[in-house]
Structure formats: C-alpha cells, structure tokens
Image 1 (cartoon, one colour):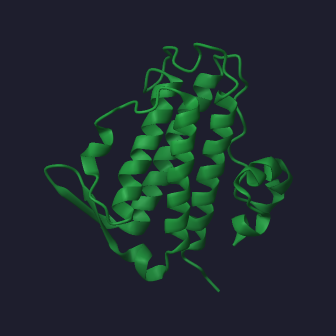
Image 2 (cartoon, helix red, strand yellow; image 1 turned 45 degrees about the vertical axis):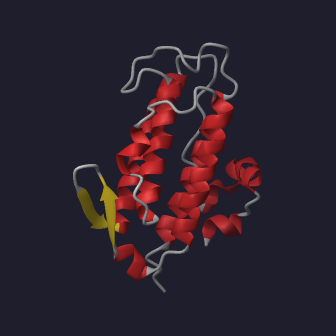
Image 3 (tube, helix red, strand yellow; image 1 turned 90 degrees about the vertical axis):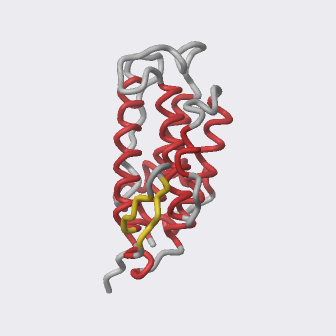
Length: 185
C-alpha cells in the first residue's frame, strides 16, 4: 500500500537527526571557532545555524496555521551560544516531526498560508515541506563545509533514511529515545 506521508515522516526524523549530529560536532569546536568569520553564504557557523533555526520557525509556524511570518527574522542570531541554539533547534525539530506524523493525504494537499508581511503566499503543504527540507539540507551542507576549516571533523549527515545505515545511527536515535521502528514507519 502506498503511503504518501511516509517520505515526509522520514525526512522530518532525518532532519532532526542530522541537526543533532551537526550540533554535536559543533559542540566540540575550540573557543572562537563557532563565531569565527568564514567564507560562505552566511559569515559564520553560528550565523548559519541560527538561520536554519529561524527558517524552521518561519515555515513550521505557517504549517501549523500560525501567523509568525517575517517576525521570525527580526533577530538574525537569536542564540549566540550553541547550547541554547541546539535546544531551540531540537524543540522546532520535534514540532516538525509531530506535524508530519499527523499528516494524511488530504492534509498534504491542503493549501498553507505563509505570511510574508505585505502578502500571503499560498502553496500546498507537501511543496512547503519539500522546500523546507531542501533548504535545511542546503545550509547544513554549508556548515559541514565550514567545519572543514576548524579543529572538528565534519560529521556524516546522510545516514538517517535507509535501513542499511541502522548501525551508523544508533547513538543518534538513542539521544531522542527513538528506535529503528520509529524511523522506518
């Protein structure tokens, strides 16, 4: 039987696990490396991770029916320190997982209103989710590249979808209290 929501549930879990693994790697940075100026779209690891979080707030709120809109971007770096940033990221990741777990085919096709200040964007839920997951992957890749210029080895970020990678993600699943069954449903 085809389940049109399964891929979004899996991507929401993979998103949270990749964020967790990336934040864990960043927690091993030497003093000054997190906020150090780097060559990328955003000028530092800290700025890029804050951007990932802010965009999650923006789109998850819209997907939940909220009207946060551009207010999400009022503070471009709401978390100057990694522990608070990591907690906020985990919180929004859990919201996104809950949202995806509650979806069905009809909700996937529903129109989402995205408040953009002077206008309201109207797009399908599945398109907004696809855009959000692509956006987050894109910017995590930038952080991954920036880590190459630090004392920390960039972590593997693509071991969260297929069953064959199960042994590589055991610790990550444990950090969330999840099992392979949670990830594979």
